[in-house]
Structure formats: structure tokens, C-alpha cells
Image (cartoon, rainbow, N blue to C red; front, side, top):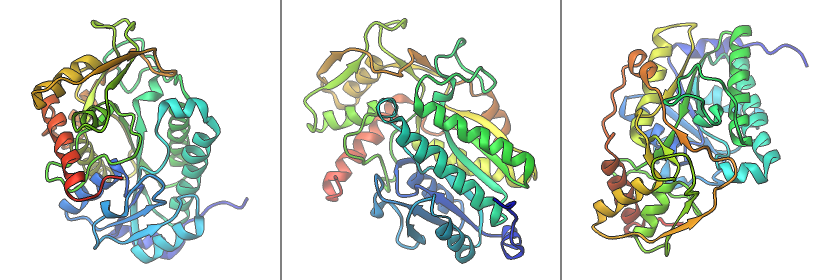
Length: 347
């Protein structure tokens, strides 16, 4: 394959252009679109709508239905929208599913990301924000886990994300591409203005599942694993509000623009962990009702505890969490569940 080179027209587009959000009709991607627009940024979206929703993208945002592995489409978007930066959310993200369908995850998360990164280089797009995950750490030896901790994923999902991180680092050494890798811990909640929220069918994220149960859409909440080495035996996670996470992406893009040629890797969380049972108790407090819990064995690929060290993101980016109370995250998730029904948007 011949070397990839930026076209002159594309290289000039970086002076002032559009942020292309891949997976922008999905949960986190749609919130990033809102945050970018709120910050006065020009935005375009590409999404297959395999798990996303067209209504999640504002009508005045250019939308392309397609796959990030489609090089011709990506080149056309880069030209038409004068793309200067990419925020990459598209891909598969369920840990248990990755264990049973590893090849799907390597195709959707690694092969497709390679095509997207190649397109960025070819079109002279020099800033790239990547949606990574705490799953790259596997079962951490020290908690809270820092960005420099050993990377040892214990499931294909984490492996696929780490492979893309490695690709970005290698490409950045060979081409004028600066990247921001943001490693999410557990994302939850919904836009406080109820413009978007988590809406996928058959959700596995705990707070979304609990909110559905609180709305009577599930008979109970499954608690997977009660024998972990944690205070109450259930898994402990660091939950971050999706709107705070979206704001971190905008702040990361601002940072890349202010530091030409530099790249950044940062955890996204609050440095506080809550167990599964503590989260369900928080839902009970917010709803003034009692969720039914069903105890079940551990799921494959789930570590006992994942809590972020967030010193780097707080020190480096102009970012301060606004919605970091667990009850606030739960309340916004519940409000979104009601909005889905009231607007007839429930899948």
C-alpha cells in the first residue's frame, strides 16, 4: 500500500473547520454533539444507526448514515464539511458480548478505527479524540488506577480499545496527528435539559437498567456477583455523568488546539467508587421506592473494582465536574426514562 499523504485542500481545512463525531447518534456521542454545539462549534455526525437514533441528532447538524470503515464516505465528509477534528465514539461496547463475539469487536473497534485514522491522515485532519475505556487496565493492582498503570485487559472489549490507543500513538509518531485518549469509567445519567439520554434496547449499564426497573419496565435488577473482595461483595465502579464526560471531550479538543503537536491520555471519572448495591440504594432514595434485586453469578470479564485516579484530567484540562453526585446522576437518568415515554421515543 502506498504511503498515506494529506491532500493540499484538506490540509488547509484545519485552520477552521468542523468536528466530525462518529457514533454521534448514540448515547455518549449525542451528548458530545450537544456539548460541542453549546460551545459554538460546527459539528457533523456519521452513524450507522445500528444502535443510535436519528432523533438524537439535531436537525440542523449535518448527518451521514454510514460506517467509519467506508473510506470514500469519510473522504467526502472531510471535503464537504471541512473537517478539522474527529471525536470517535462509534464501535461496540458491551463487555459480556465481547467475550462471546470477539471477532465482531475486533472488526468494529479495531479494523474500523484503523480506516478512520487513515482517513484522518489522508485528509490532513490533525486532531483526534478517542473514546477509550477503563477496561484497558483489566484488574488493576492499585486503586484508584492511574493512567500509567499496567495495561492488561481481561476481555476483548478492553483489548480492542487498547489496540486503537496503540495505533493512535504509532500514527502520531509518523504523521502530524495529535490525539486525546479519554478512558471512561462507568458513564450514566442524561442531559439535564433532557435533549438526549441512554435509549438502547436491552441495556446492560446498571443505572439505566435500574431506571427502567423503577419505571416498571423490568421486574427486577440483576446483581451479577456477590462474592467480590469488596465491602458488600458486589462490584465497585466509578460513575461519571454523561454530560460531564461530554464536557471533558470539548475541553480535550480545546487543549489539543492550544498545544499543537502534543497528545493527551486521561482517565474520566470522579475518583469515587460505588458498589452495585449502593447504586440501587441510591435509586431507592430518589424514587422513594424499593427495587427488587435478583442475585446472580459473576459475569465473565468483570473486575471487582474500577475507580479512576483523576489528578491528570483535573490538572491538565479546563474541566470541573458539575453533576458528580450519585443521586443527581440517578435523577437525570430517571427523568430521561420518563421523557422517552412522554415523547414516544422508547425503542
